[in-house]
Amino acid sequence: MSNLDGLSTSKAVNKHVKVLILGAGPAGLAAALYAARADLQPLVLTGLQLGGQVSLTNTIENYPGFPDGVGGAELGELFQKQAERFGALVELDEAQSVDLSARPFKVSTDNGEFTADALIIATGASPNLLNIPGETGLTGMGVSYCATCDGWFFKEKKVVVVGGGDSALEEGLFLTRFATSVTIVHRRDSLRAGAILQKRALDNPKIHFIWNSVVTEVNGVDKVEALKIKNLQTGEESTFLTDGLFIFIGHTPNTQMFEGQLEMNNGSIKVDERMHTSIPGVFAAGESADSHFKQVITSAGMGAAAAIEATRFLEQQAG
Ligand code: NAP
Image (tube, protein in one colour):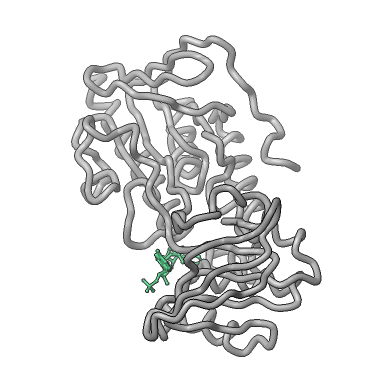
């Protein structure tokens, strides 16, 4: 089953809902499940990344209930199916702007305008760029931010991974299925990733490390051919031949739309311990509001909490 199955798209809609959820990752779909089970018939606008970041991850090994791990896309589909079973409507549409100055809240999309009595923001985060010459021009031509999506194209090829966190190591390990060698370039000499992933990466004969170094330039004509790599300790720059560059250097919350309307905290939406934002009736969950844990389970938990609070809010409004 694809994530697109069963999705409806709206055309020039002007629709009012009790609960509108922006984003269909673990936070948005967990919120949808809880709001649906409260009989609020929530509407979820998926945004462009169906299933959220988790759907781009090959295997999730730390979501309870799946002792042998579960595919990221499969988990996203299961989340959606479970929410839909209780009446959540999931639509392929992306919010372009919001007006939170009065109730009902207004959300404009490519397809029309939605109004909602309560809003749950679960817009997630997007991968950070290195912002180096050649990066943007060669994206899709060897530069990638998703090993699960693009790993297949690097069969019997050499790739470089940038980053020292869980994502870099997990995706680097995934790339060893295809590539002949995976070179991880990290700006320090110790990894940020958790112990299990560190051990797996350090023990993998296909993975090599270049420590204390950064990629400063991507070179190639219509495809990645080489990188400039700078050693931060010596200042020395060298050319490294490679077919691909995978960048995993963290994420930025997708919250630009809410700036100036909601209180923010370093780019994340500021929420209290019950997922309330600075505007009553607007809640936020997952990576749009969490710059600390960023796990599937914590995002799903925040989504559930946001929906429980949205339900209470609507009950109070109804008197
Ligand atoms: P992260 O933990 O923030 O790590 C980002 C890595 O990129 C760090 O090693 C950082 O270096 C490096 N970096 C940042 N900016 C850079 C730049 N401009 N140039 C070069 N290197 C740069 O991000 P993440 O790995 O995407 O993980 C995000 C969150 O998701 C974390 O909480 C992580 O635990 C979680 N996650 C968990 C799993 C799992 O549990 N299996 C899998 C994936 C992600 P420094 O170390 O020097 O700061």
